[in-house]
Length: 336
Image (cartoon, rainbow, N blue to C red; front, side, top):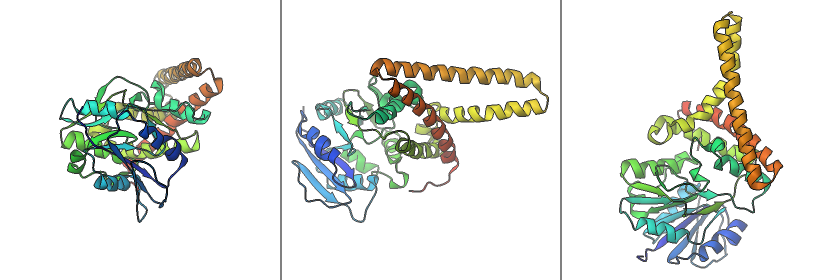
């Protein structure tokens, strides 16, 4: 393998225990060692780590601006992005660089970010929202569950490696769209440069989840707003049935009874009764799928509390995501 130099860029608010105890130790144990670590932080620190450069950002900036700043300082031919609450498998860099070698048109390599086994019950429930077919199957479980190798056009920067020259060619990240800047970035790589991003399950990262319900739903809400907005302005990557399903579900869940009631008011029983049957059938199918998902989680984890909590989290996530996706779609501009 050619000895490609890699710059690993991690944007943070301040040095934290995830970084000290997991992220940096996991990087220092990589089977491929030709790299530097660049940490961009809001708060200055006197701490030192091997192979690591710590760069203070001033004034305080968001993750997108920090990543751009890190790339400007990077010496690597390949830029690898991680979050400060994630840590890679020991073969992460080795596997990713092997993919870059195969095709010059491959500009990016990505892999699953899975829930660490040490996460709490509420964090694991959040993880199952992301990793189960019912939870996020429409949008793709591959982001958070080990899935077959495939070409993708949208991937989060918690586990994304790109060629530096292509990063610079598209102008880096657009900070106006946090937390959706990675969607715009990947769109530009694939559809403006005509390059490929390859997802490979061997390029593995562990990512701590937000606990259900409030932290998880706050994160989901931000994603939903931006995905809805992107469905209008970047339809190539975001106007897809998988992203629309939660909104269609919410409209049917709450709008169906209203429509049936109005048909009854206007004495249109020939329409209201079939519609009522269809409503009960579809909601019944959803509940059965929810129960099956809960059973699958139980059989894997042997924990009924986790199974029920995951089921509740999936349902509430669908409602919140569905509503805020619609809001984002009709928003002319999103607040930073």
